[in-house]
Amino acid sequence: MRIDIITIFPELFKPFLQFGIIKKACEKNAVDIQTFDLRNYATDKHQMVDDYPYGGGPGMVLKPEPIWRALDELPHPRRVVFLTPQGQTFDQEKAWELSQEKNLALICGRYEGIDERVREKLVDEEISIGDYVLNGGEVPAMVIMEAVIRLLPDVLGDEDSVVGDSFYQGLLDHPHYTRPEEFKGQRVPQVLLSGDHKKIANWRKKERLRQTLLKRPDLLKKANLDSE
Ligand code: SAM
Figure 1 (cartoon, rainbow, N blue to C red):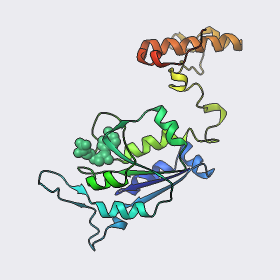
Figure 2 (cartoon, rainbow, N blue to C red; figure 1 turned 90 degrees about the vertical axis):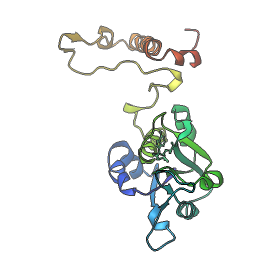
Figure 3 (tube, rainbow, N blue to C red; figure 1 turned 60 degrees about the vertical axis):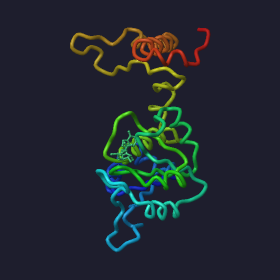
């Protein structure tokens, strides 16, 4: 999969790409991530990427030409996503959907956002990471990339497989414990020390249901549960 990011702050992505699973995914060529500095696509000598809003009012707007020219360089077919608080709220289902794309382009807004004509002509989809307003689309782009890249084939090893993660099969994950067996008077549930794989699997299944019922009962209504 290839992910292209259009931003005025490409430097923000450098540390993000240099650690953990994202770094490994790039090294394994599971994903090719490219950043495009909007200033390199400005059309005037001052490399202006923003301008005053028509009609007046506070803030600046990202100009249409640099975004248009940057997008011109990206491969086809592609899905062009604009990160905006006005978009559809991102969730695990959307992460699965985006993970099927060959080429994904993420446009990071800043200031008051981008010129409406780019939204209308070049953007396939608008995505929000939640009902709050951030300063720019760079953190939302990272959120989406983290969620999508871990779903790509061969990115996660068995030890951190996505099966059993929250939202997989519509339920939350079960609780996890590691050593020591006792911590400040609290013991690890006995069943997890029993070595009985069937009992452990049952306990985990029950806990996934219990956690979901306690924390997100809304999910249970949609969950694909079997008769057991
Ligand atoms: N005036 C815009 C509005 O109210 O819809 C908000 C602009 S915001 C200060 C600047 C940029 O940050 C947006 O263009 C968008 O790219 C990004 N952004 C802010 N909050 C976001 C969110 N919740 N989800 C995705 N992107 C967001």
